[in-house]
Each structure stands twice: as structure tokens, then as C-alpha cells.
Length: 307
Image (cartoon, rainbow, N blue to C red; front, side, top):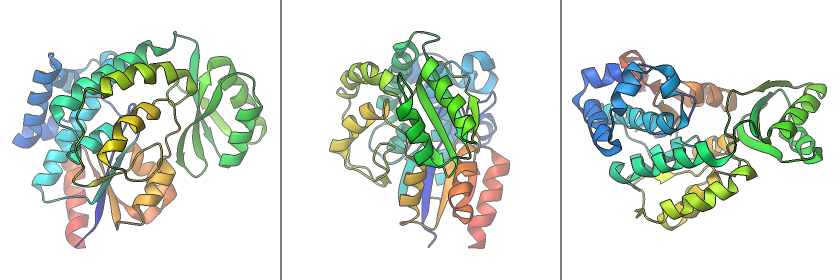
């Protein structure tokens, strides 16, 4: 029996038309979007299917949209007999993983994610925060340079070997990026106004903790790996971890390596294939495929049936 892990994408994976093909072809996927529209109180499905992109890209719409689309893809995966022993998601994707594992219901997770998105969008004044991708340097070099810069800047994402993201105050991020370029790294400022996974979101996390406290988490039916500690946890841990996640680094590479001690392969479920690219750089043979439309579903099922 093939042992699988499911991984779910985070913000940035959204695109107009995501999920539409599966919703048109599978009642299970259509049902997720219908339920999401009802819970959100607006046509989230229309934003996913028709855009426009500038609306879909707004944090307050992107986060619930990606979650709903990923769960619709998951419903199709399960209809095709796929199941996972362990799951994880990148930042927002962790909420998808918790829902997929039965730790929280769709009815509770969507309002929680909507509150998270709104708080994040309002957390830091426009122009104060920034994020930058750093490629080609060891973790220790990036950590050291960030520690030497005045102001708030640090690692937001440990994505894969040689690929990190830094986050914090705009000036500090720009200075760190310039110094890291001198160290031989490639740097790219990201088109993101919210400095996610940095200490600038600690106040946001305190407010969000109040929203999390209203939710009743259940013990997951499959293990869920937290971005914060890169290991699986119990229901009592989820509220604290989800609040800390807002201002803590996403330990994605560490999470993938942890899951690979438990399973044969990983499957990315949801819009895009960005996680598959990262996972290939961690362990090329470990990613089996992804599910976001009919073509990717068919390709994945062919691989599953070969094993």
C-alpha cells in the first residue's frame, strides 16, 4: 500500500479559473464551492472561476479562495481513492491541512481564515513592510546577515536548500537583500505588502488569538505538521501554533523532511504546483504529482496505478 502525504499551497498560488474544471466535472468539487459561497456570504466561486485577478490577489479574497479550491481538489482526490497518513500546508495551507484531517470543519475554518486575512491586510501600514526571496546562500549566512542589520528583518520561509524568504521592515529588508547580494546570493523583492512571518505581525497574532479561541479543534484523523515546529501535534496545540505561525518562520524544508520519514511520496493538492518545485529541490524522487485540474489528476493517477 502506497503511503502518501498531502501538501497544500499557500497565498500566491491563486489564479483565475482555478478549480473550475474540477467543479464542472465532479459533483464533490462543486459541492465544496457551493458550501463555501454560502459560508462566506458572497460568490467566492465566481472570484475563483472568473476573477478578476486584481480582486483574487487581494489577501482577504485570496486566502479563503485558495482554501476552498484546495478542498475541492481534495474531494476529487478522495473520490479517486487517495488518502494520506500525514499532511502539511505552507502558511495558509496549514488551515487546509487541518480541515482535510478533520481537526476543524469547513463551516468553522472559512470564517477563521477570513478573519486572519482581514487582520493581516490591516496589520502593517502600506509601505512599512516588505519581503524578499533569497537564493543561492546557506541558511546560516542569511541568518547572520539579518542579525547584523538594524531594524526588524529575519527569515520568514525556509523553503528548500538555497531558497529562503526574508521579511520585516522595508528598509531593513532592502539593506539585508543588498548585503546578501554582496555575499553572492540572488535576491528579489516580492510584490507583497504584508510582511508575513515576521515580528511585525505579533500584534496581529494577539488579536487573531481571540478569533482562534472561538473554534473547537478536534484530534486530527491524519497527522498535521505545523509550520512552526515542523512536527505533528495534538488538538490542544493547534490554537497556540496557529497564532505563532503569523510571526514565526515557516519551516517548510524541515516539515517535508519530517514527513518523508513517515511516507513514500508527497502529493500537492490545490492551485498551482509551486510546492512540487520546492519539494523536488529537497528530495527529487519524493513528489509524486499534484491535483489542480483534470490533466494533473489523470497524470497523478497513472503514477499511482503504476506502483
